[in-house]
Length: 127
Image (spheres, rainbow, N blue to C red):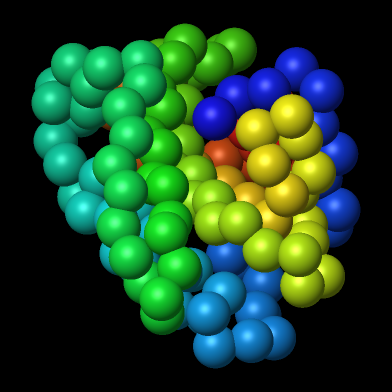
């Protein structure tokens, strides 16, 4: 899903209220997946592949869910969950991959094993 040429319109996060039912449903699923990852032991998070994706139909839309785990400055890793679905209705994502809605939220695992929400500025590379 990554694309060098992309434009994100807005913050592309599920932590903000979504205005339509489809985006709300996609965000509920994405945040559920992220919560499951957050509950995973740190030792298992460190073994996550750098990238994986799954596809699911939600509210009659084909949605791509991506899990990204990579090194993060001043921490062990950042774990990101992204969701994308195509739409021309007020899109928040325009790239060579497609036009639609992209959401990305994540958390960082510190060297001491603590887990905290990824700062917004750390998420821009994923949005």
